[in-house]
Length: 222
Image 1: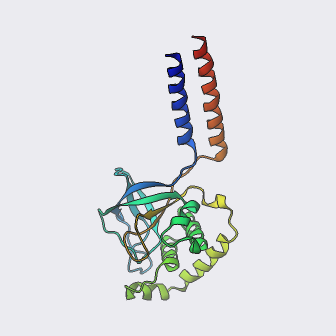
Image 2 (image 1 turned 90 degrees about the vertical axis):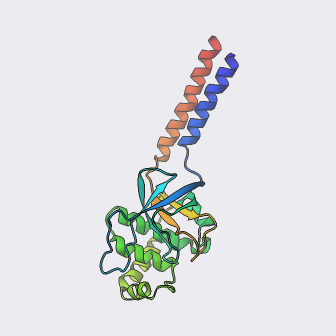
Image 3 (image 1 turned 135 degrees about the vertical axis):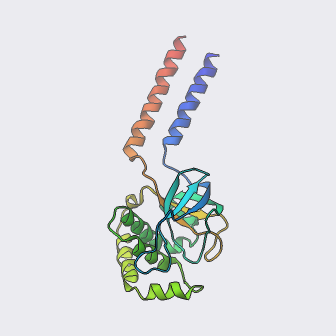
């Protein structure tokens, strides 16, 4: 009986430690809930960011930025996607590792939108410029070509991405639709959620291991 209790408690502690570890890729259900009242900016024919997404049926929607104009979703549409830490997810992304620098630049643009240093309309169209052809929509292509600041923003962030450390992408998540392909299926999205600092995770893990030792010693005296 005492051994069973020890194993049960240690199992719970190990499970807690795993939950505290950095996230790995996993499959998630996504539902597009609309733009929640956002409007198009600067003469844009489309709204772009923010796309509000419900994850696994949550009643709280998360604002995300899509990377491909050529793919599409409609309100209330639900699909499955692989949610991966951003840099890890590039290997199995919709456009693949050959576009790693473009993905990194897109990630930095999204972060700049979140911290208020880059206009969301400019960022969204610049990111679309990396991954889209606009071949199915002359209106979108005309708008993109009429705004040279989009290409200039791309060049600026490509240069930044070439220098940025991996830590610059902490907190970013890449949501790649299962069986999705360029121009086919739902859009691929970039999202953000704050993650604990590595030092905090280390202290949490050390504390759990120490606690396990204390519990084991106490039970051994019973």
